Image (tube, rainbow over all chains, first blue to last red; front, side):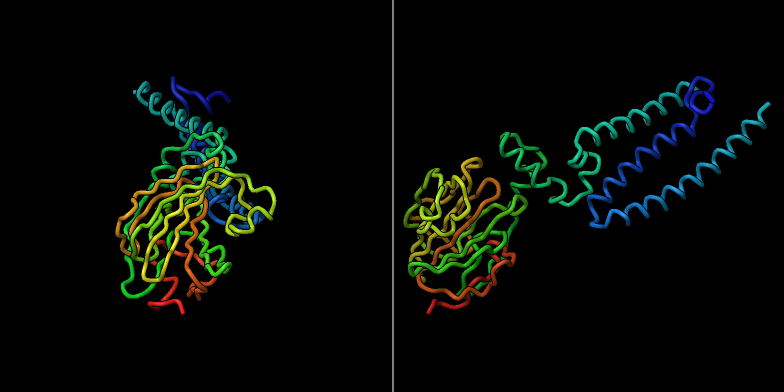
Length: 73
Length: 233
């Protein structure tokens, strides 16, 4: 479990990507909420669609990471 | 190599933490990270500017925006132009004087211009007064709903008769700057002063004037024609 956060004297890249993703998504939602006048439900739908796409990408990235890690001697 | 990667990662995580801290610390107002991407009205919401007015402490970015003074193309010919940028709040006719009341918001250009060519006859200042009862403002109808107004009044001798331009602000903002002097000959659309923060500019014309701009329309100082013709009647 710890390897998901810290490995070989540095952070694991998936952990850094998750931190960046969470920060950017918060900033983007805040920006869209202020910039475009839209009902909260619409904003929620866009957020869910965006988050789902990113979640799929993360799962794919994690699977690839595991495969690479397993292949290491 | 690992150390270099760690430094890069720490940099990225530190940036994210700072961005999140700014987001939380500035809530409900926009964080400095997204401010550059927002239009002025959303970048500096009115509640935030009102808070600055009370605290007398303004954001430098806002002040830089507020003090902008764009060039204007003054229309040629016999006409009158709007004295300021903003919303035409009201047109009042009382005691044989037509009042053209422009309301300025925090985001409008606050440079005031003369609506007509003429010579500055006088510049007077009217200080801070609380108008508590509507009867107290019956002679100054444009002050209705304003608490503690501070005014500078320019009287101009023009071809249309005696025209007054009234710069009004609140006691809390109370910063009016007039750049012209008595005896100065002004051309139409020339800059005459500036009001610090949102308030009103009232142009007073003798007689009943049929302005060409409907109430609640936005006007541009020195550019929007508010009356066409060489005479009012």
